[in-house]
Every structure is written in structure tokens, then in C-alpha cells.
Length: 118
Image (cartoon, rainbow, N blue to C red; front, side, top):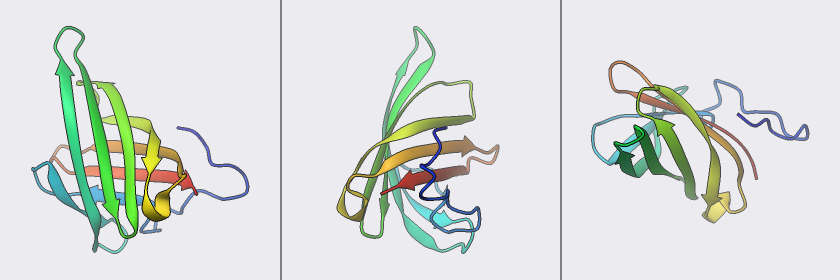
């Protein structure tokens, strides 16, 4: 994962902006803050599986208060933890730079960790 510039520290683990948990089994799911357990937005994704190399390509958008954050992942299907660069932001996230880390738990819950600077 890329580190943030020294001018802005990474969000603390208890900061509701830094860890977002996705719930549900559908393509448009509510996302709750791990710190406050409140819904902070929604995620939506599209994916494509390539059986010739077992790679999964998917585009993930987080819809948070004030804008959208887009990412793209290209990962083997066998991993449960992976990271990607943030590709685009809109609204208050316009010009965003950073990374998103996704971790899939055995129960199907996905935890996203965002590290970004405006």
C-alpha cells in the first residue's frame, strides 16, 4: 500500500472514515463504520472473471456522504486480502489520491480500509 504524504497522517483505526465494513450479499450494499456501527454509505461493484488465469477484475465504487470513491482491483481469486489505488473521486472526493485495502472474512463480511489525501 502506498503511504500518505507526511503532511497528512493516515486516519486512525477508530476514525469512522478509515475502516468501512460492507454488509449483505448484493451488488448494492450498505456500508457501516467499524468504529460507530452506523451506515456511512453504500458500495457497488462490477466484476469479470478470467478462467484462463484465475484473475478477478472488478471495479468498486463507495458512495459516501458528499461524493463517490472509485477503485479498480485485479487479483487472483484465491486471495482474501488485496489492495488497489483509488482511481477517481467525485463531489467532495474530487482529486482524491490514495489506496483502498479490502479484506474478506470467512463469514462473507468485507472490510475496506481507505488511506487518502484530498
